[in-house]
Image (cartoon, rainbow, N blue to C red):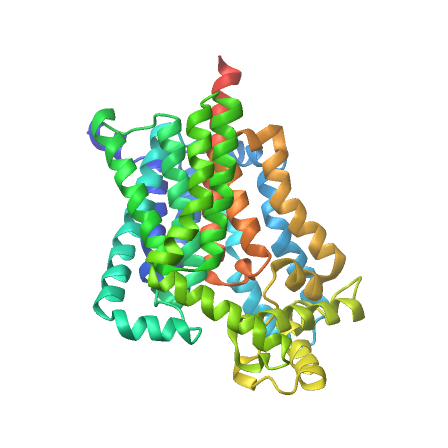
Amino acid sequence: MQNLTNIFTRKNFVLFFISTLFIGICTNRVLMSTSMMAIFFTVLLGGIANKDLFKQLRRLSEGGVFFSIMLLLIVSIIGCLYTTNFLYGWKLLVLGSPFLFIPLAMGAAPTIGKKDLTYLIYVFCFVLFITGLMITSNYLLHYKEMNEALGRGKAIETPFREHIRYSLMMSFCVVALIYLLVNKAYLYKEKVEKYFQMVVLVLLVIMLHVLSVRSGLLSLYICFVLYSFYFSFYKKKHLLGVLILLLVFFLPVIAYQYVPSVERKMSYMLYDIKMLTYGKGGSYSDSERLISMAAGIKIIKENTLMGVGTGDIKDEMNKIYERDYPYIDVNNRKLPHNQFIWVWASNGLLGVCALLLGVFYPLFYKKNYKNLLLLMFSIITLSSFATEHTLEIQVGIAFYVIWLSIILNFLNGIRQHEDRV
């Protein structure tokens, strides 16, 4: 009976539902949503059953780091008070609800230890590795057709057709495995797991290049540069730092020469930019993204302080398209492909301040930036904000909120241990 009690604990239930969430991120939207709700109710009901809910919730007020994550949803709720398209605004609020209940749950959940974090990274990497193998195999089976599609600006098919978010998650897996190697974090046998981590890491880098999504590759290279500085100046392993830096310079060149999907993607990008300079960007993916940003900036100029309201961003963008970009086909009209522009256009300066605080406060709170995993995660997500509205799509929200909350929970646990010592 005691063994069962040790197995069916709140922490183990939380870890289980986080694992099912990771599976859902790449397989099933219903599983993704229900897993997030299950994490919340596990902590809530567990706290009520053990009569320590309020004690656990008091930890949330310590520094307010988890509350900072909730700010973006709170500002969106405020933006719904003056929106005219309340239906679309409500849809965005429901979509963004994890910004509220996941930080609440993980802030009050039992603290995650080093082995728990290692286990979660393993599960996440396993899901991305298996789905990555399937994607790569499908690419090889339809090699000619897919390369032709890439040359026309299409993307290799990924779960939910979210190739950009998927590439960011794969990039995170690579840097997370490096983090485990640096910290010698293993579950069972170091000798076996060390080589397992290295092999999976290399294969994920190869898969990421086959996928040839620029957002994921850019974030990966930036993280490699930071790891190079880390090994050179902090660990004093100058040779390793230089080797990583050389990898950053030569890997893109090698990939361009020997990975057809990378060559096709880069060639299409150059062609796309060329068409935009000729004023023919109405049917090219990169041009459409740049035009969406320009349209978003026009909304900001007209509604700098308050924005247009959470639910009116789509309607206002359509007005800009009709007025200034009528040559863009209705089906190709995109919402601002920049997280900062989207938030500012929707919720004004208050929204931008909330986004900046939500992103940077957890990083600088008690020098959390010293933790490599949080630093690399922040770099990956921030790099995507420049060209994507990462936090306006279910997969992006789930990836961002759960991993940020996991890492913050882990760091809180380390501090609590240090306080006890």
